[in-house]
Image (cartoon, rainbow, N blue to C red):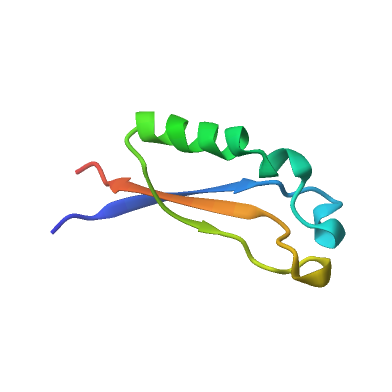
Length: 73
């Protein structure tokens, strides 16, 4: 049976994001794409991008990227 390890990376969380939502910088495609490419080079696979709606007007306060890879035995 294969076991996996997970890594969680938050993007865009600032003091203002609690009210205004994810920081503009984190919304840029190259920011999260760079994170995904770097993790892929290290053997991680993107599983999910989680964006909870907890700021004003239901905006996401941050994005959390969830990666997995087989655990080393």
